[in-house]
Image 1 (cartoon, helix red, strand yellow):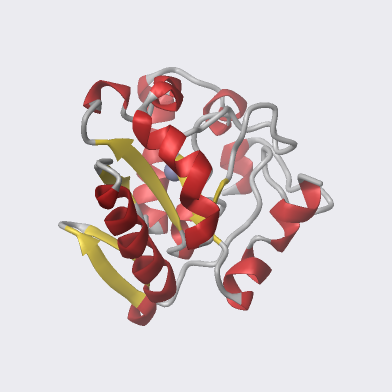
Image 2 (cartoon, rainbow, N blue to C red):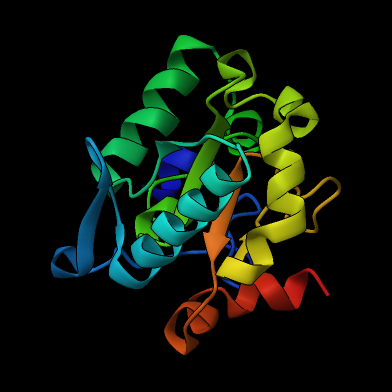
Length: 181
Ligand SMILES: [Zn+2]
């Protein structure tokens, strides 16, 4: 696979900016929406966060949660091919399989039910849902993974949030955390 990517991991294990992540044990996954699953601690926190948002009139919609390496493989290589992108170009917007936070079961892409046109777009940061997340997500142990100008060199993703509410989750994201300091 590394030969296909045309790049070797960096000394800190990163590949094209993305850290390696082991896939969550499927037994740890629970459903949070039709066709969407998260690791059970993250799922509980996400449902509480959606409920809190709803109380404030915000419709937090789950656009993507756990993604298997097979799905990530398709997202990376097939779309890369369709769009005639180099691996480096593709990696700015999507992680290579085995290097996606979505594989951990702790990461989720969120949208604003009142503004579906902003789904998976930087325009999401102009929505009421994003303003609500900025003010409240930490209360539910969620953090924005790829802020503007992040040290991983991944494009700004205002919709992508990860759960860091257990020691296990914190440990998974420790390398990314350390790099961003
Ligand atoms: Zn994402």
